[in-house]
Length: 224
Image (cartoon, rainbow, N blue to C red; front, side):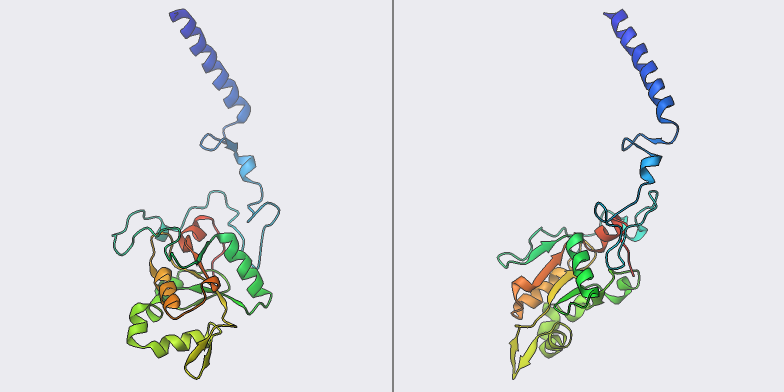
């Protein structure tokens, strides 16, 4: 038995050596692909490299933004958000592709949709999703609503397409909103969404991009 195991070990060493010679020094043993494969185009989806000015970083050695490299933040307030944090309200949780397609539609002149960055301006300056507008959660949350409801109404009517009909809010032409913040651990866009639901904003016209800028940058997508 010992001789047999020794023979197998020797054979394995020769096999690995042969593979190493065949694959070359540039082979990436972590993902089973070679550097030549990494040189292929980095698309959004197969066959699509860019949508509405949004693409992915084509440098296969690109690393995530250090601002999003930290794994642990105090909870609260930085607690992991559920997939559907607004139940029983039927607010859809969407992906990067949904946001990219919304950006495509907005860039093409669609006035019925709006991508909303709910983060504070300091974060927005570090980079945001193209074709988005900044409405900080500090201006659209339960505290803002309690303090100055008319200021919140001004956001709804001035930015979100809601009509004020003599004190009654009409949502017939309200925009479909895609709200995001810094990712799965960020409660800023959820706070804004809860305020919108309190104001009677239609659930079907609210979309929650849970991945936020954390996932957006992790995928190397374009920021502005």
